[in-house]
Amino acid sequence: MDKESLTVKLLDLAEGRETPETWQNWWDEHETELEALLSRGEFLKLKPCRHGFQWVPVFGSQKGAIAILEKSGTAFEASDLYQDRYLAELDAFCKEQERVQREKQKEFKTNNPELFGRYPKFSKALAKVLDSSDEIQPAATEVQIGNQESVLDFTLPSQVREFFLLTAGIQVSAGVTIDLSGLFDLTIHRERYCVLGEFWKEADGDQLLLRPGEETIWYYAHEQDKVKRLCNDMTELLEKKLARYFNEQ
Image (cartoon, rainbow, N blue to C red; front, side, top):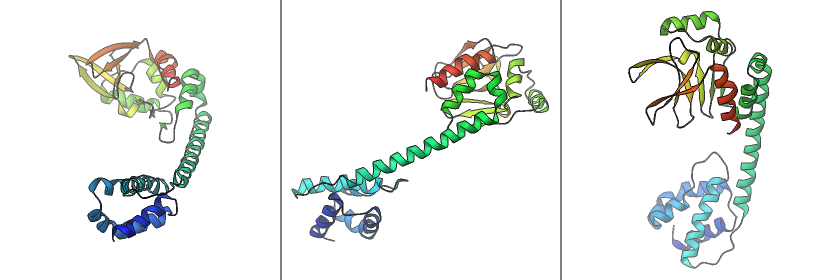
């Protein structure tokens, strides 16, 4: 590998005559030589990245090739081929993700009519933000709820129990988790709480809290190390606080 043969290859890349396969194969064959021939910065900019998209690596390498050619004063006409192919690939990917999301939302509505009937605002807003990685669990039984209360030595508020009888939990990547099996005790400033789940109202990982003998939902802002009153009960949490939060996403 010498500078003349490298320049020929860089011109092929800059002007759009390479394919993702031919460029990656050539790079794999000559990587060691290129590392010795180029400066560290040039080498890293030219190196094709490992990426899920087919056209991203060659598009990124084209930018590195253009920089090297411009520095050497070599004339060329840059091609938009790789950028156009990448944008088309990205568009197809986004459309497929949207299709999967719509299917997930449709499935959620079909499988949870009781949840929509009891918490219409919450369910409608939740359906809008659901993606393929989110989870809506089937309803819990009275026995499962009772067993969890026994393990925790904590009686859940009636409205929280009502929620779990419709779904044993939700995990939403937008920043909300409420999970019967994930309930646990937590002492904050010498006061006992039951952690209902997470609600990223102010920061990632902020928690929803219950206190013994209350319907009130509390909120632990961990960055401030403060417990704050959030709302009167589970219905208000779902129909007002979380519905508004999801609608703002």
